[in-house]
Image 1: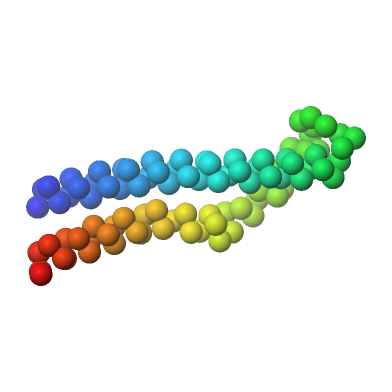
Image 2: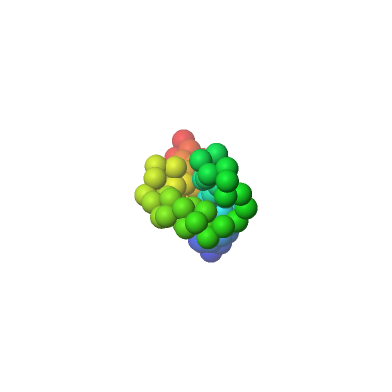
Length: 93
């Protein structure tokens, strides 16, 4: 039983690290896309201006409510379901 709890603990730690890395990566992709959009719309204002930072900050405010960020929570669900399925398959077949 202790081995099972140790497995769950290491699985949750790995899932959390993977979740954080994916979240940072997706946020950086979105930020880059917004910065490119700003550069296309405002070619006379290149560089890291306060207006551009405000635009990116306002646009990123709703990022947590998007489908992509919500699907990221599957990082916690799918591996746990896979482990539960494997345990069921091995022990009760």
